[in-house]
Length: 148
Image (cartoon, rainbow, N blue to C red):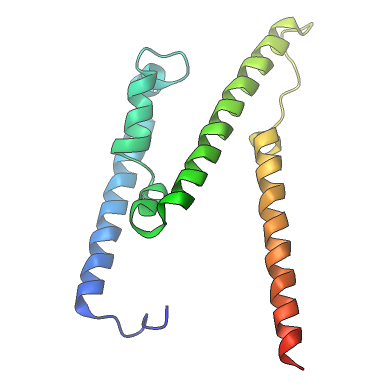
């Protein structure tokens, strides 16, 4: 961050290449997401679900996710990927549970919570908030210790 205003040319080229790759990747992801055939074939229960997963996670990962390959150490990336896999598995089980509840409900319609109220979202948000509060407390303690 210190040299952000005075970047050498090779860093500018690298940033430009990274920006271009990220932009093209996102355009390709959006084009695929618009295709009803692709969504039907690769969605849950689709014939090509595994192929959709490979495209989404390996061939065309989100620009944010692909940046981890170059800038985040392996242990952190593994930790994030395990968390993402557990969250995906939990979301799949939750969708199945909701489908069973909807089938049993008297009108065929059970109460459906918004995605941001899912167990995964609430637990993840709590963990993020907890770590943020911890970091804030450490920062305040560090600043107060400088006054002595």
